[in-house]
Image 1 (cartoon, helix red, strand yellow):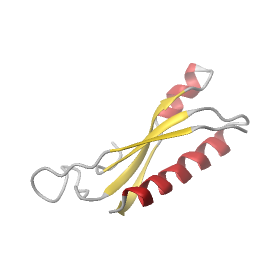
Image 2: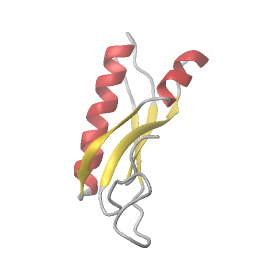
Image 3: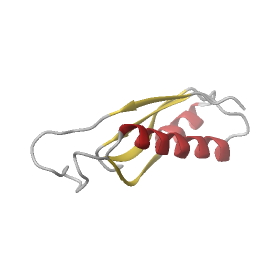
Length: 95
């Protein structure tokens, strides 16, 4: 099973210490799939709805490792054959 994961990260640091959703601006709080190369449109749409939060990593590499594990587990449990996805970590919680 070949799954390719691509990462991005976003950390907001403007004014105040909290985002409007209550998450800390100085930590990575969520992980979301931002692009999917699944063959079926329905699978791509489902992939893009995936988001996990509930952590507060200050270190980018820890957040990315956590996110990669979440995304890999999701792909492995949802599909017989993996596909390429991109994901990002952010300072805000999932919508």
